[in-house]
Image 1 (cartoon, helix red, strand yellow):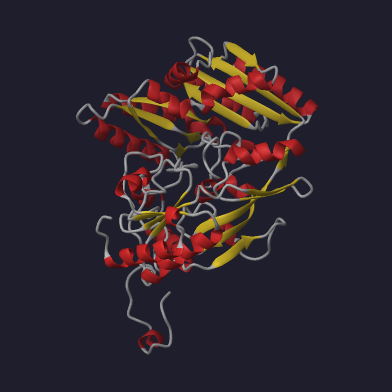
Image 2 (cartoon, rainbow, N blue to C red):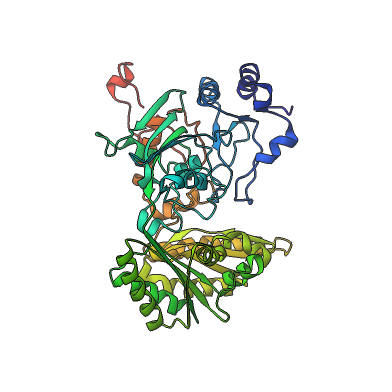
Length: 490
């Protein structure tokens, strides 16, 4: 076993004595398996990995860390794209993918109780026999976990109509950073008091670890109408999106892919999108039969009015899946046309779509880098794929530079540095561009309330983490009660 600092070595020893032999990994070769999440650019080998299978094991591991002041990081399937599950070199990586039980699916009150390691798509599959499904559907839904979705407040293609994970979680069992087991929220909606659960969802593992999640299920819609529209340019496709939303229609999803993303998808899954398209829209409507029929005719007309040269309508579930295949495979598909790529994630006002895409192309052309665009057009959540070849000297650095410039571009148009991939380690340096020092101090005070020791997923979200004993703003002399030991800073 490699040398580790004293406190960490003591924690490893406690874990090895308290947990099953197979649950504690210290072999350097096996540890390397966990050195990054879906963002491969950053790699850190953890000091030890714990393969937890129940809440008691998680609680024990966290208590060991808390007692010794050793950092810990929770990890699900490792599909995150912001370095949110990047390990700590002197810390414990607690892997939650062994929690795979769906404990309850209740059609009567439209709820499911699931372990955090349950795969997103499995929730809908389990609810399908009783006519229900789980709405949040990230592109990685075949492998990403519910616990990871909670950490990142993940969305997906259908978040335009149905919202993000936060809109579908009712309660969470949590192990806090000091090892206490608590329940946030409740099974019934609208729990009284402060929305502490709302602070936990999307906190990226900095406030503790979820060990059970109660999610809201939705009844499967009576009718689903999926169409694919081909356009000569992203300008035309963007105008069609604005026209649809402007007409008061709220589709379940409106997704856009540009020519380069289409090329990649064709190479990967032969999705057979309209030949010669500079952009395609995938539009899905759902709801009562009459409403969907009426809105579908309007959407088709608005697409044609804005330049669609071909429209295909799915006649059944098989054709619907065929239309979605290209979009769902897009992130992985770009590996067919580029040896390396960065998946970026930013948000802009929908009305700025055309302008931002043009400016993004300018930024890319200046650096000699290609960018493939595939994104949630309905709510302006962009996912530019920055393509490069690490073997070409300097190209990786140019890609990183372009990736940051794209975030700056989103902010300059009144947008955000992330829509659903989280801040994690990768985007922490960009936080001061979006938030003031006072904003960041306030956020970190919330974190300190949960994690005074700063051991839960440290180094994420905040570029300069504040010690929990620090007073926000300029330093002031200690309060007299503090000087006499009658009060503490917390």
